[in-house]
Amino acid sequence: MKKIMITVALIFTATIAQAQKTFYEALEANGETAIYEGFSGISINDDGTIGIVSGKPAVTITVKKLATGQPVGFEANPISESYGGFGMSEISDYGRVDSYPNVMTIKNIHKRGLDGYMVIDDLLFKISYIPSNGVPKVEDVTAVYVMVKDRTEAKEDSGKKKGGFLGRMKAKLEATGQSPTYKYIQTVNIEKIFNDYVTAMKAKQASPITAQDKKDIAKIKRAREAGDEEIKRYNDSIKATPEYKDLQRRIKQNEANYQASELKNTVTLRNNSNHEIYVGRAGSSNPGTRISAGGTARWSCDQDAYLQKITKSGGSNAYDSTNIQVYRKNSGCGNTVSIN
Image (cartoon, rainbow, N blue to C red; front, side, top):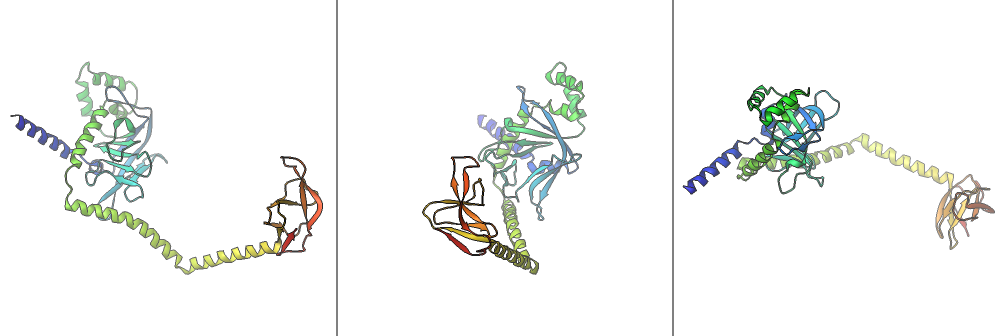
């Protein structure tokens, strides 16, 4: 009898796992016209319900697919605000699902925190941390998006529990003036729903994938690689055009003209001494141009240059130009003048 009971329990667990909708199945079942009301600042109460700090812009959610039909991500767009959109895709450099086709989470593998998303029926969770090799935890949920729909039946069921927690909570929420979705989500045992779903999905993901699943995974990988290849092909095609080549020619010519102009309007001062020197304009008490021992520096061709001496330590007036002239204006434009 014990063996029979164990077998029945295993079959029951497997049935629950198979019944769970995957990430994409849930979103597609809800439909692209479904509206999700967002809530953030989530905390888990002792009874498994959630506390909410603030709202987020309501969104509609679209599953993103390859042309061949394989889902690769999602996109959430605000319906009335100019901000609040988000999403993630496997075709990007960093978005990845945890298991295909039995997707429980999609996450950003670039960030150390591995933040991402999970969908349970009509609830989308934003999660701050999803382990690389592990399962998400309800305490890491930072926001939840709840599908807006008629929940009259659920409210009536809750109300039947006279004197119970849900009945008292329902009466309290009805007095707050908040949206029906807000009232609903605060009566739900999120902790139980979340943990039961994770357990069921891990069991579902343990099932072997089919040959078709392997083909679909290969298509997703090729599409991701093709993204980089397509960018390279596009860039190469641009570089091959006469317009691009002419632009590069003009850039080089402009650089050459600039360098020629610089040479024409400057003189190179070479310091042949074994110590650094400073060169400044006549009567200047500000730091001039520093030239290291054996080094060179550019100097404006139409300006006289004088050696400077240090008059005090620190400050902007620590240098004074002497009467030792090392260059006479317009006498060496484009050339090198040595200072010995």
